[in-house]
Length: 319
Image 1 (tube, rainbow, N blue to C red):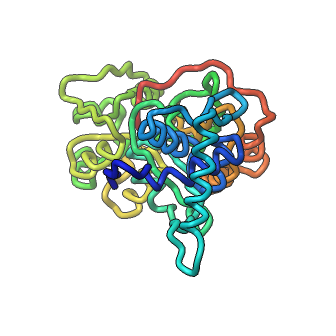
Image 2 (tube, rainbow, N blue to C red; image 1 turned 135 degrees about the vertical axis):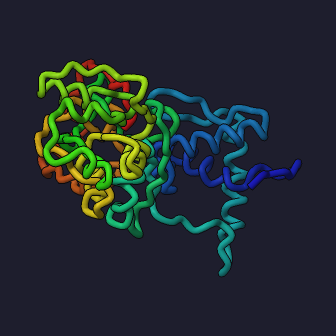
């Protein structure tokens, strides 16, 4: 909603401002309101722009009111008390705590969406940010799921599962290829892959083949598109069991060769190195349990006292 009143401040920013002023912390205000730290910060910044003054002095350990902020705080408290009085409540009731999760499109559509009812509830709501780029925790993201080799500097990460990959194709194409084909025979058809070809390189290398993408092969930015193209018979892809199993169970694609190799890249749940908000810690636990991670590993990931990850590199793929 666009706020257009020249005489009233944006009313939806007052509660965030007041909670931050009382606690001296955007994080504490966010937890009370069921928002992210970034959402509170943006609301306060919006209020400051409308007023044309700084309301807070930001510091590493919290925020303190400026003289202008202190004067406005008195008025804001009066306004909120008035709006909250009587039998009718004008201030919007708070719902479940919001946890902001950044995920890639394939992971969201093929793994997260079928599990949303298990992850969310009356107490927690997932605000999904669907994107390919690296997660930016400075923008209010609490958690992220990304694919790579890990670990990475400055963040904590935990691998969700190990993937044993094998070639798959549409049933009609599988009939043309024939039973248990040689690895070399698969190269008679287009190879479907995402922006990272390490999986195909490793699987074919196990058969003594040095693979390099060819002009006839098809590259997609997202594994969901790889899977759809495969199901339509456009070529041969690699299965990623946690993502492709529903398509296999439905008969949309079939496994061509039972020989598997471990995918050199994997999906990880990642989080900033700073302590998690309580709702984010709870959601991290739910995500990890849904991925089959044991409680001890979950506690180590959520616990802020553990050492941070060492330097590593992101995989080039978005899967």
